[in-house]
Image (cartoon, rainbow, N blue to C red; front, top):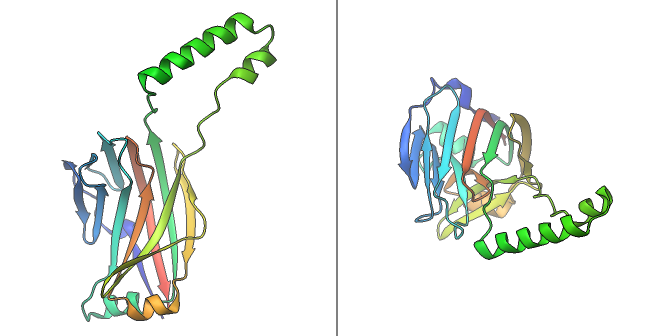
Length: 209
């Protein structure tokens, strides 16, 4: 037996003003670590989110999807009774450049001036060039709500992100003990805590027992 969710089955999404938590549709939301920034949404067929005023203290940004609620509906029970979850997303993430502190900026300027005056070849310049920022990644987790809290079961590998639309896939198989105690099931996509924009044109989840 299987149960599934498909983002494309909806009629599109309305615009939402900036807030710490916004409801995007039935069971779907976006949120920022409380007190550490804002998220807003633009109207469209797919998800088009903007994260702004994200502080350096922010621990997470997320896109969340409620799969199986505590109720006794057939769909809710099917999600909670599933043992393996397959996820597919088509998304793009554009991050704003990180601005270094003033002291760091001064050090970078001084180092650049020193390199420029001392470098005698392209090889010398490249040797003193600052390291490039690693590509951003997201983490996908299945959240199992238990009687005394919750347990996040992460997909084994991080999801690579790109400014251009990219397909990513993940499989999550929660431990039997956690599934047997789960009262509700959610899916959470955790993003780098930075100002930027996220577009999601496809999000599909299939679970099997």
